[in-house]
Image (cartoon, rainbow, N blue to C red; front, side):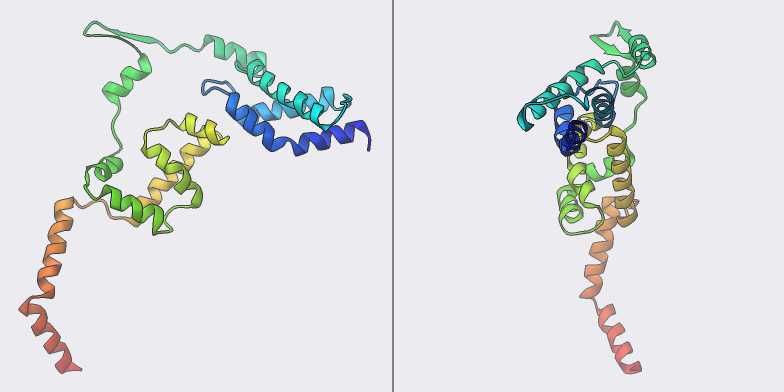
Length: 226
């Protein structure tokens, strides 16, 4: 087998390792996603290093590991001059409030003053049946996909989407889409428009009806018709 073909095959076989190495070393503030960094590595290796000679398979893997770590550093500001210029000029303005001595970014201030909790999430958290509802959704139903059941618990614990994405080697857009779809599925499957008191009242009324004279009379009328 020619050196070039052998090296490219080694690169193909090393893809999963590359993803893990990049995901581990990449910071959430990185200009590129894990997939984009791996793509840059693959492109550079194929175009510049595919004919490089290695003593053995181990030395080849060591070289690829070092290259992956280096590319994470080299592409932190982007893969081209346009990316680097945008990254260098991107500023998160600081908001100064004399009544609050701690320094906040403008983004933090907007979240604190203008942000709103998701109403659906609020209703779930207010219910003392929240934990039971989670068990039903995650263990005893097929409302969510396996991926959603694996990721959503981290979202409910307050983990940032960027951190979740980085830990499993996907884009934060993928986590966002998965989360939104999960909540839509839950809302479609569970009626959350009623308050807890309304649900309890309906339940109590149903229990009373089961043991009431009204139900006995209704069953007698039904049996006579039959």
